[in-house]
Amino acid sequence: MNLVLSFLIVFTIEGVVFGKPEIKPFPDNALNLIRLKEKSIEAYKANLYKGISLANLLEGVEFKGHIANLYAIIIGEKDTVVASLSEIMYPWNFSEVIYATEREIIVPAGLKDKIRPKRDKIARIIFAEDNYPVRIVDNPAKLVVKRGIPRTEKKDNSNMYAPYITLKYGEKNWKITEKILRALRKVDIERVIYGYHRGFHGKCIYSGVPMRDIINKFRINVKHPQRTVIHVKAPDGYTVVFSWYELMNSKKSDLYIIADKVDGNPLLRGEGKFRLIAHGDFFADRSVRSVEEIIIEEVKF
Image (cartoon, rainbow, N blue to C red; front, side, top):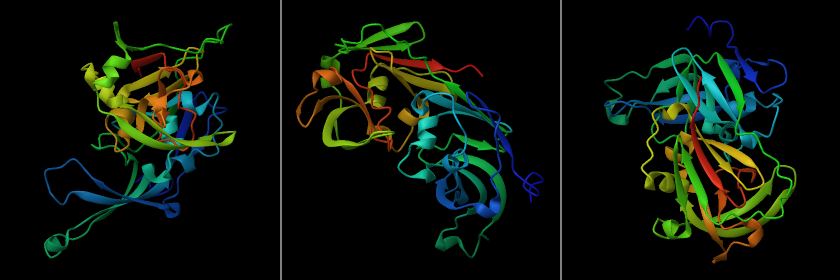
């Protein structure tokens, strides 16, 4: 057994939180099971992980700010990755991000006479929804919570209509117009909308283009995707944040769209020309009305 696991696993939460909480996931309390095909040329290299939802571990932490505009830097023994706090706290299935405490190799039936199943005690944070398992953090020691772009309050919020979206990365800017979106793949999403404090909002079908396809349209290749976040901003200054992998390397990437129609009709003027629909989230906090800017930022650790 790993020396750390032989007594207790502890990692700290820092940044825009109250106090300096310590998280203590006990291996005996591991509740979630996920199967993960890891990066390997060996056909049988997949593991069954037993662990605890990271959302459950963070349940008692008080954050300074709105979850939709916070992200986490997860620092481990060798690796450091970025995740939006929403992809940890807002998923429909809490097993999407887990703190694994045990793993067992999955042996196909035809190889059971050649390979003996192996079970290990580990300390590892895993993002099960990533298409390619690059966000794996062994022996996590610290989780630093940071705020996205601060909300800039405007004196006059009467005009919430943005006729186009400005996409920014470094010194480069691109204009996203209706004409550009018409040429891209469309996705329809039946959305049951909940608000974090206001309950059921309604049900409708939004049509739009996945954000991944929009970013790929402009051939944006970030240097360090594991430390990149994407901010989405409205004219009134309301801002939310995503991780790069959440939008670009996820089984749920098609669930985050820039919509221009609802139930087959143009959006209501109060929703703007374009609206972000975050159908991968249980809550609607990141479904930004009247999207004005999408800003791609590589975070400095």
